[in-house]
Structure formats: structure tokens, C-alpha cells
Length: 349
Ligand code: FES
Ligand SMILES: [Fe+2]
Image 1 (tube, protein in one colour):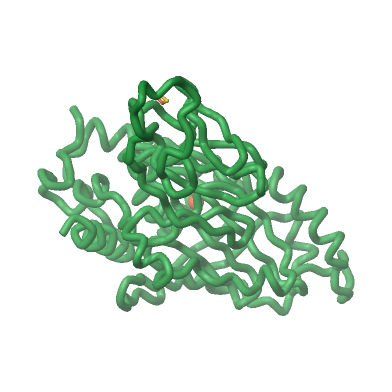
Image 2 (spheres, rainbow, N blue to C red; image 1 turned 30 degrees about the vertical axis):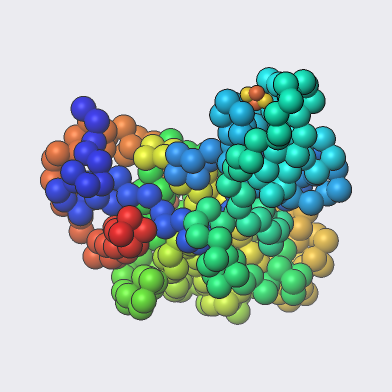
């Protein structure tokens, strides 16, 4: 049985799992390096298809993914100069969304005035960001600042598309009651909720816990880093964590629809996070970067894979049993869901 729509949902849980994300924010949609000059890709933001392309001049542009002629997907076409060409009759769409050229006979008619929507685009932190909402707000809202990248902190980028609602991912990343799932990798142990604060559109959470449990990295971690607690935040619509100002992560979700979400993670490590084994000597950054490449494959991706399996199973469970009550124990989860719901109500108003 299909879960109820947001409007028909009766419980907080049902509403959270049906909510979209407010379009008046910048959303990470793709890695900058993944879209080459002359390439077009389809991006989906909450059921809306957007054609993202890089002109042969290297500039990124985003337009509605529908030809101004018969609405075919422009992402199935190709890029010519700075225009996007539909595969069917070859109509060229300019970066302003207007028809720039029609390559066949026009039967004495003018080029139609029809226009497709364009979206603000920018590149930050190695990611392409699109503003799907009111373009007048694009300059008011900001992509989250990550000064650590400019300061040269080594980072580990990871992305994936999971068959689950975006709110399940937010619940998962900041709710440490799922320690059991990660018994093998132990990213956190014996967590105890020490802080839960809602400030504006942010839910701040703190845990007393032991952060990190990979025995191979344990011997190279700087012992002066306090890994006895962690701060997390659902800073709508983004999510981050911070361990002693030294180990951080950002999580950016791109809601595709009610059951699919693309998620981008950036894990960040202060330059003095690692030492040469059994010494007090700081590990050279080139070595840190090499080690993190191995850690990504051996630890981070397998750890996130466990979350993917759980979230996808939760999505299936939700579709089957959305009418059954959920005895939610962690009060933080309720706050994440309340925020998601209230922002979606705001978007629909
Ligand atoms: S349908 Fe796109 S050019 Fe005709
Ligand atoms: Fe997890």
C-alpha cells in the first residue's frame, strides 16, 4: 500500500517521510569534475528534472529539462557552443532559456517566444550547486562555508544514491542509537545524548561517546584530539558533525523523490589529525591523503554501505507498514522530523 501524501498524512512520521525539501536553498547536485565541457546531465530535484550542462566555454548552466518545442528531455540532447540542442528537431536553447536557433524550415513563421526556466548555478567545495527555488533568493541564501578546504584540510568525498527518503538519511546520520548496525566498524561507541537544542532552522545534538573505532587508524591518530564527544547539527537542509574541531563532516542531500535520495558526504581532517605510527611526529599531508584514499575504500565506504542497507530496508518497511505506530525513543529524531515537516509546510504555503 502506498504511503499517504504529505497532505493526507496523519502522523509526524508519515508527514516526515512524505515531505520534500524547501527549494529556496542551494543544493549540491554533482561533482564539478563530473560534468565536462560539452556535456549535459539530468539532475532531479524532488521530481523536477533539470538539464545541467557545461558549455564549450566551460561555463555551467541549468535549465528545465524539457524542449520548448514538444517537451522532450533536453538532457537526452547535446551541447553546441553555449546552447543546448534537442535531439528531435534540433532546436537550440540558449542560456536564457529561449529558443536560439531552429535548424529547419520555419514556414515563414518567427522563432516562437516560448521560454524554459533557468536555474542559478555555482561551484563551491568541488561541488556543483543549483538553486531550484525563487531565483530572487539565490543571492540571499548561501552555500555553507567550509573554510577548512581553503585551509588545506585533507578531505574524503563520497557520494551515493540511496533508495530511501531524505529524512531517513538525516535521522540516520545524527541518531547514534544505531550503534548496533556498525558493530564491525564502531564509528561511535556507547553514545549518550548530552545536548538537544533547536535554534531557528537548526537542530543541534551532542553525544558523549567514543568517536572512531578503526584499529588501523587508531595508532596514527593524534592522542591530543578529544574523541570523547561529538557535536552534530541538522542545519536545514544540510547536516554536519564536529569532533573537537579536528574531525568534521558535511552531508548534503539531494531529494529525488519520496523513495530516492542522492547524498554527498565530505569528511574533513585537520592537518594535525594524524601522526607517524608510534611517534609524536605529524604525518606529512601527502601521506595523510594517501592513507585517507585507502581508508575511504577500506572503512568509510563500507561503513556507509551498512547505513544504505538499513535505510533502504527502512524505506521498504515504511511502504509496507506506514500505518503502524513508531515508538521513537531518541528525542533528537522527533526534532529532525519536526523541522523537515515545518519547512515543507513553509514551502507549500
Ligand atoms: S521536440 Fe525538441 S526540437 Fe522538436
Ligand atoms: Fe550510520
